[in-house]
Amino acid sequence: MQYESEPGAEGFVNQEVQKDVRFTVQAEGAIFIAPRLVVATGGLSIPKIGATSFGYDLARQFGLKIQPTRAALVPLVFSEGERKRWCDLAGVSTEVLASTRGPKQTLPRFRENMLFTHRGMSGPAILQISSYWDGKGPIYLDLAPGRNLAADLRILGQRDGSSWKLLLREFLPRRFADRWLETYAPAANSDRAFADAEHKLHAWEIKPDADEGYGKAEVTAGGIDTDELSAKTMESRKVPGLFFIGELVDVTGQLGGFNFQWAWASGFCAGQAV
Image (cartoon, rainbow, N blue to C red; front, side, top):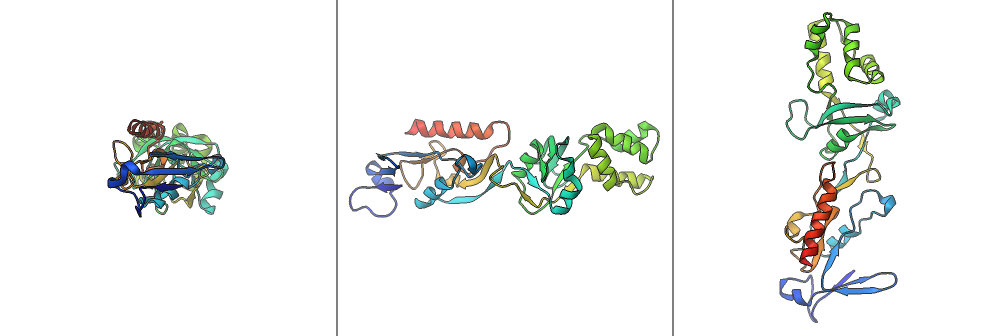
């Protein structure tokens, strides 16, 4: 990839030479020259279908700032010890409220399903919260969102290990409920013990060892700094005629088609300008 400007111009092109700018793209069998270039090469996610760093490398060639990239909307991997404890439950799914700062946090929180895998956790709730995980700290899962288990115990009319097990099996898959009780059984049949047990259910602290990386990530977080581009046209502020769209840009949406929508919308804006 090269660019050309009027004879004698040096360095990166600028506003003064915009009409004379030409971009040269050399492919295997042809060379293309154009006054405008739209880069839509995608991010680093899912390299097996051809994802590379080409778009970011090109942006750096023209002096654009790149925010650090990382895998997002991606499954998380347990440490070896936690893997041995939980991963034989692979395929078991349950509704949770996922966050990164504990049960009193406001946002972001995601009430969706989580799924045990052979290496850790996935499912919509985990994919969503992975985009906000810093790669170091814990995530928190409320396994009984919206439930007051102390009140439920009173309705059952008894407070002991059997009633607690019966209660957990109401809202957790049986295999998971039984494994949970093996791991976090109430210390006694006291109010304090069941209060502590309920708190654990509402704020299960997990410290993932890693994420599954770009190979399993649905999107790439980070990318070309949005300050480098026009918000209306996606054109580079430094290099007139050069546009970057879609996943290359530091814009990451949640699940539900938002990343596709961003790709289409940013492409439309660039197309209108070109």
